Amino acid sequence: GAVVSQHPSWVICKSGTSVKIECRSLDFQATTMFWYRQFPKQSLMLMATSNEGSKATYEQGVEKDKFLINHASLTLSTLTVTSAHPEDSSFYICSASGLAQLSYEQYFGPGTRLTVT
Amino acid sequence: AQSVSQHNHHVILSEAASLELGCNYSYGGTVNLFWYVQYPGQHLQLLLKYFSGDPLVKGIKGFEAEFIKSKFSFNLRKPSVQWSDTAEYFCAVNAPNNDMRFGAGTRLTVKP
Image (cartoon, rainbow over all chains, first blue to last red):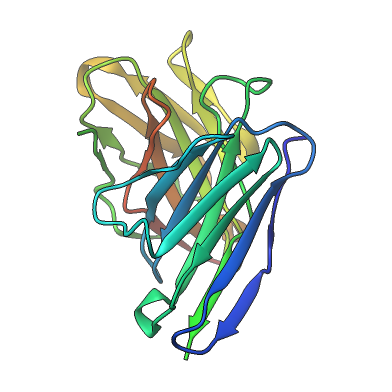
């Protein structure tokens, strides 16, 4: 149980375009979803936390107008990278936690590799 | 703000050697502690977790970790590593506000 999927698994886009990444909890209701960014050979950096039906809470230094997060349902959150630039190229990972899960445990998706050319 | 420190950046061991990876955190309140593993090209997998109770936690694949509250530590151990344990290991701390903070990670290379 507690499976989280991400789509797409990798995407290449041109500079200036927008890219949407989906995160789905497949077998549980995710009241909270998290978006992380991981640079090569580095740790995960929390970008934002979103609760279903509420605006996302962004970490310091993360541009909310650039990284749009929507958590419209208990099983889906989306991250849209707007006007992408090469420096946005990274590995984006989502995780989800829900009321039915043990407290504070997060389940991670497989990640989406974004390359901006 | 809470932070997580993993002191070993890269550890190289031979098969059958014992492993201990250090993890210290700075948060003073009640925390939940996790160790995740990321095999090459794969996503994060939970190795073990501590919420409360016995401070010695056993996880999958023969890993265990000990929570020492007085030292703010949650070190990961395995008595005998295998080549297949080669991976990146991340310690993570989750405070009651549900924010999870990760350590920088420790790359483990096990030589056959």
